[in-house]
Length: 246
Ligand code: NAP
Image (cartoon, rainbow, N blue to C red; front, side, top):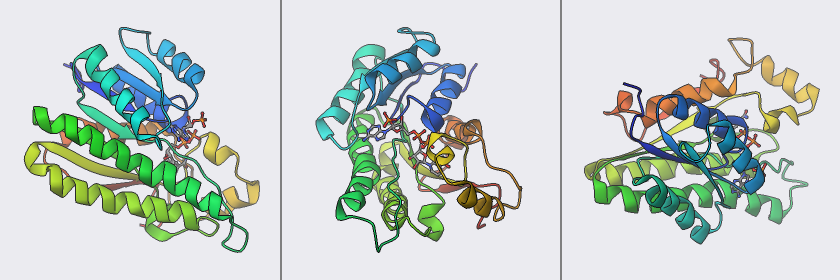
């Protein structure tokens, strides 16, 4: 039996990158999927790659909009009959040092990561507690553990996701709902490929394993936290970093 047979998972920001890699791995393990993304066309193309309507459906969802998050989660129940797993993955960067970062850039990043993860976590919890089971996986970042230059917005949001996940884990444990977080380090994706070569090289020097991670290497940890393999774990933060800043 596959690890996620009979389970329905919702993933935000699932059209590409880490979110899509998680969707692919979950589908391979038998899950049915609801893929949320800002770009409906891209989310639909991702759902088609996973086998179409029997396996995956696409929904346009901006995670900062709480009623769109409601619609996303309701789609899982209406289409596949349950909501068992939520991965709060959607993300953006608006990097700049404090001297040049605008208030708008600060607010945008806090909104997508922190408010978006809060929207997903609280709304999924409300559904999952009724069924006395569920697993929520929140994608933080190593940036939220150590703080990165040019990322006062992103580091604050990603550290906030750790506190949010632990508080939610405490509130939900006795309802059978587990909440855990992942802190990826430098992972190859559209987000990091936009980085200047100098910044990439500097980060590589900090990684004991001497390479960037692949999106599938984050997805396998998400699978572990979403499945019963981690049935006695809640409120944890797993680092997927090649040993960087251990
Ligand atoms: P990515 O390739 O840029 O994918 C992010 C996805 O999120 C995109 O499909 C994007 O949609 C979507 N998105 C952005 N804003 C959204 C919103 N308001 N509502 C819904 N979806 C939204 O980035 P990634 O590297 O896969 O990152 C995924 C997650 O991992 C993020 O939370 C990121 O912070 C985290 N992370 C990444 C790394 C890394 O090295 N890559 C390291 C640590 C943590 P559009 O493209 O349509 O805007």
